[in-house]
Image (tube, rainbow, N blue to C red; front, side, top):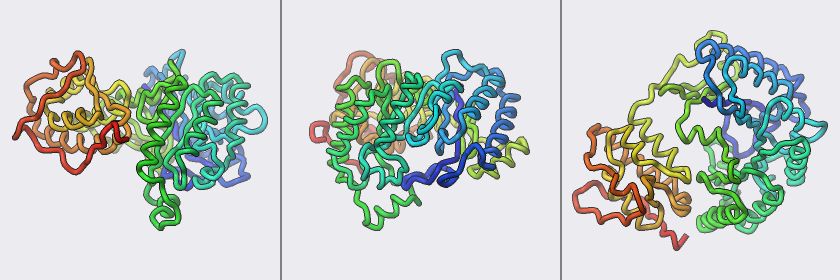
Length: 430
C-alpha cells in the first residue's frame, strides 16, 4: 500500500496552481500557526481511524505533497511518520518523499532535520531556472535558491533528489527551456519531472492567456521542447520511464510507479483521494469540512465502487503513460476481451504513424506518441467505452503479436468505426 499525505499550506498561491491549498502568508511561522496545529491534530485522528480499519498493512512509500509540505516543521514530519509506523507496517526500505520549495530549505539545518525525521527523498519544486519564467509562474524563489537547496540537501546527506520542472510556459522559448535543463543537469539530481503547462480553469495564468495578456509558445515550439528536452535528458543518463518523468537507473519514483501500476493507496488530509480494494473516496477539500468528517468518523462513507469498465479504462490510461506500456494480456485478464481486436483500426493508424510500438505482448507509445498522448488516450477511451459496454469477449487473442514487433494488417471495411477527429502527426515531422 502507498500513503499520500496532503499538506494544504503554502506561503502564497502560484499563478498556475489549481490544487487545494491555504496560503499562510509571508512572515508567518508555521510552527506557531493555529491552522497548522489544527491540521496536525486532525491528521493524527485520521491516522488513528485508518489504523483501526487498515492497521498492519505494509506501506511501501509515503509521499508528502501539497501545497508546500516543507513548511511543516521537521519535528512534525517525524511525528507523522512515527504514527504511520505505529498503525501500519512501514517497509524497511520504504521510499519517503517530501515536496519542498527551494526557498523553504534556507537557514539552519532544515534539510538535515528532515533526513533525521525519516525523509529519504526530496522533490524540489524548481519549475524553471529562468528568472522571467519564475515571475510568470508567480514563484517566490529565485534560480539561485534552487542551486542552494540542492547544495544544502547534498550536504545534509540526501542521496535521492528529484527536480520538478515545467515547459511550454507563456513567453518561453525553446532556448530558454533547454538552458533550464542544462542548468538542472549541473545539479546532478537523481530524478527529473518535466511537465507541460496545463492552464487550469480559474487560475490567474489561464485568465491572462484567455485575455491575450500572455501567449503560450507556438505548438511546434512546444513539440520541440518535449522532443529535444527528452533527448537531452536521455543523453545525460536519465531513463524516460513515463511521459513526464526521467530517472537515473534505480531512482524511478516508487510512489508514482505504484499509482501507475494500480496499487492501493490511502490519502490523508483535506482533498486527498484513496483507492483500496476496488473502492475510491475523496476527503472534503476544506480543512473545516475535513476536520468534521474525521471527528464524526465518517471518512470513506461516500464510496465509489470501481466498475470493471472504470478499472479497464484506468488500466489503459495509466499503463500507456509508462515506457513499458500496456500488457495486453492484463487487458484480457481483466475484461475477457482482446485489445488489438477491439481497437484494430485505431491501433493500425497509430502504428503506421510511428506513435506506438508492439513488442513482447506490450503496446507502448513511442516518444512521438507520448507527445500527443492526451489525444491518443481520449480516442482510445471513447472506443474502449463503447466496446466495454457490450460486455462480450471479442474472441481471437492477441498472442500472435506477443512476440517480435510486427506490421499490423490492413483493416477491412466494416470491422469497426473509423478513427475521426484527430490528425495524428507523423514521427518524422515532429
